[in-house]
Length: 234
Image (cartoon, rainbow, N blue to C red):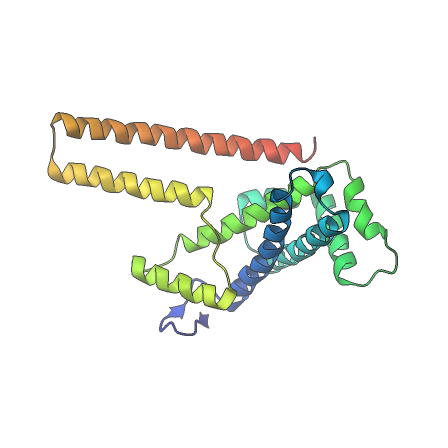
């Protein structure tokens, strides 16, 4: 149990070890965003300086393995993350060795700790990116289940941000949750008014259509995720 500075209630939901894991994820995400920005600001891969590409991607890879270590030490659970880790033990080991190469001096420029991960037949970069995004989604899901009213939840998030340095950007799951809340509130408003006129019927139809689109979006997302996980070994 850990008390947040500036917050007068005990944070039962987040012990110190879990918040430490969030912090390591923040460090990894900072490296990832730097690498991502490098790719976005270049029109094609030939314009990216090789040494800079390697430097930024290596920092990200090395930091992400520490996130994996924390995940396993804390025995955190998530279906998708467990699938990515358990079904790709070879990639996890290659990433561990890559981390060792990054954060422990290697006298050889082409040490096999750096080169082996690129030689695997599996799509190691896709695996790393999917795993990273699912870790971020996991963090965001924890924030979606905070206790108290909206004001208290904002206060907790602010305290976490002060301690950790970061709160994840809105994820797909966050958007789904927000839309579901909006739909529920809209239905409640209609039901309270007992409206049966044409405008109310049109509003109800719009709500049902939005629900259908939401189901379709969730299905498409799951298909995308499944296809991406499958592509790691293709």
